[in-house]
Length: 158
Image (tube, rainbow, N blue to C red; front, side, top):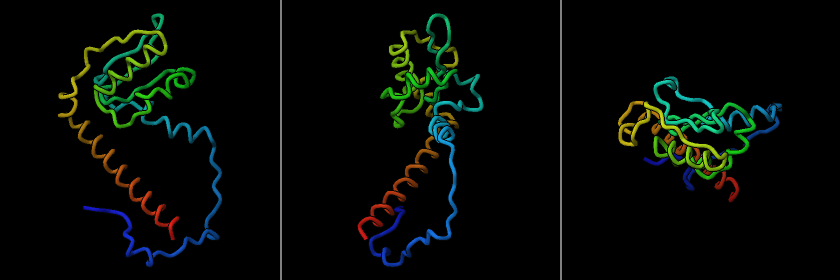
């Protein structure tokens, strides 16, 4: 199944009338919050799905979940880790992602990784309902992004 705009239907597109659009004011901090959402919103069952904690000087500086998401207690810590390749790589999922991210964060912040009793293997996580739902969401977002990119590229070439 393909989605998007085909080159043959380009002639059917009409220009967007921007005069009818309203200006919207956006607080830059809300944009940052939107970017941080995948990393700072643990799953609803967070207590049961913790993969590991990164500990520095006896304090937890990051909690990683079996899904591969993570949460940090402060913006200062977030700013130190947000550009790490494993944190930025949204193709990593599940415990494999949690393991890689925890190791990178621990190395960057000079801490240690403390694996939780609730840590799962990649195989266990992939068979969970949460993993299946997460993968469907990622596939849906990817399809929507591809469609938007196609439309933008077609619009630029017109």
